[in-house]
Image (cartoon, rainbow, N blue to C red; front, side):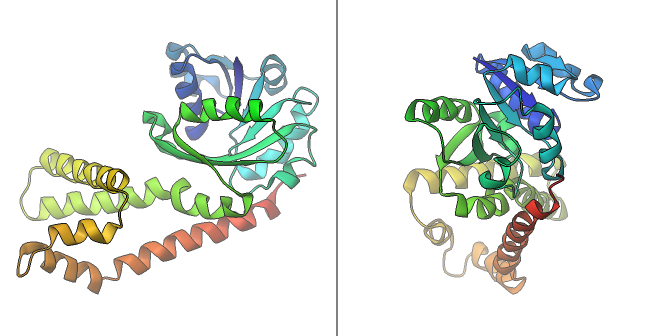
Length: 261
């Protein structure tokens, strides 16, 4: 199966690489091809012409900024007629995508962890058959974990897991700096912080419990952890994270109003 990735920016390039490594035939487009020449070593064919790439492909993935989606779909509407088109653009609902082209649209939101095939991808669709859904899910499986949801939750997914790696990176950076402050060498602080986060996430997923259960497994009366937790609570870390997700979700909801005709 041949897949065209229209817009090989940060997420588009990651998607193209993941698909190529999963043995898909991939065409990726970008105006400045030199910036993504590295994709060629994974077998990705590079192309400047969006129409040509879309015509050759069986499935088209739109990975451009939300404000550019309308312009791109207008450009390739004849080439994608009747085909499955997966939009990765934040905030653009399926009903709006359908105004630009007569295609079978899927709205999806992966995150940058697709680079290591550990993305969480949520998607929604209206017009696909069961066989076509299996085809789309095979694509998402090459990114990492995936789930099909109702479209009403897509903006919230964008605010939580789509933007999530940025929030987690801020938290990781703080942990690393904390390690440096108490005297750890930089490489040890980085490894300790990253592996701690990875291990905790794995605990949560495998035990299927509440994060508070893990927290209480670590805290002991009069121990070191409770003093650290006290400082986190005084800094209102949970409130701040919830506000960040809420703000990103609200931004996703207004992006469709900026869509170019």
